[in-house]
Image 1 (tube, rainbow, N blue to C red):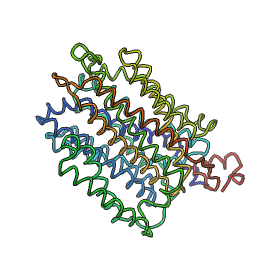
Image 2 (cartoon, rainbow, N blue to C red):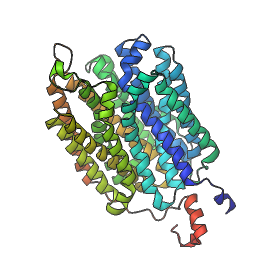
Image 3 (cartoon, helix red, strand yellow):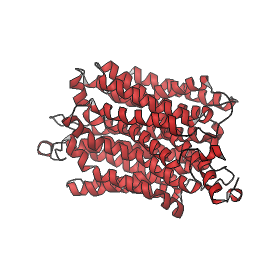
Length: 486
């Protein structure tokens, strides 16, 4: 009982987790609007500077599920410190990078911090009182979208007031403090998955993921029919089934294929893939649309990087509000209903952008609807995955779900870039119909995600799970430990 009382209050743990998730999410989006500034500052070219995004994306796609699984086995809090430390070290190297090569390497190190996501969900499940889990999951999941939106808002002012280097100094400070706080105050994980860490499986998974993400993210630049792009797609197609076969036969798989076949898990993962295509593509291309000079092209608003970010601020606020309300909404209506609502609102908001984008107020309303949708859907996906899997697989299941959403975002961004840039004006800007066609495609993918969400099986609460230590401590103080389900 003494050891239980000494465990850190879950509220402090939650603050540390939110800082980690928020910082990782910021680093995903803050760099995007200022790539041209980085290109000029480091004396490189447009093709090379895009690797600042690609290196981060590929690294995160590999390390998110791996770090989550290692956390399930050796301790989530221990790996949380590692993930936060990687974000801090990578941010430091990026801030002082003298060349584009160093910056790209630093961004790859930052990608290791993707493990913060599954570790956060696992720690919440292990440590928090059962009645607080849904709300905490919802807020932390919504922070992914909130951070992405805030990154677009603050990137411009930071660069204008300071320099692009501060896009990395600030996350370094936040994640450094969070890593130290996690080391000293976040309690060690009470739940461990048995077995060894399957290195060969990790290598196979890394091979097909890297091949796929490189082909998807660079295919537009290299050419979809280029030998390099086709070769990478072929490599992914060959190694993926080998990895699945190896995992299915392993006595200690990195990713349990039985878990991946759970109806709730695979349907939510499919929703994540389709949903990611819409959400991340909106993050990438809606600011670009706002920044298009209307006096030259006849569409867009000629906004600066800072102005376009401020125009999307209501979307970010709406996402955060939806995340705050997600716990109560899930308790009242169920996570599946929230997922269906979030995917449906995404489709409706995107449809609004397609048919009405001539006035600022129209895009403000539509982006606010999208913000609510993102907050609801992110929270629901996290809750459904956590409820559907055994406690010892929370990290890896959440990591794969986040990874699949990232893959969807990469696919959506690549396809949308091809559609939007298919027709160019003489001045180099895309024609308006390119944006209309691209956003129409996102309406379709969002509608499909809503249909799949309707097919997600409802999972009853896992009353056989042992409540986390924080819940046990509260129960003991209330004199009701024996009444809790085991």
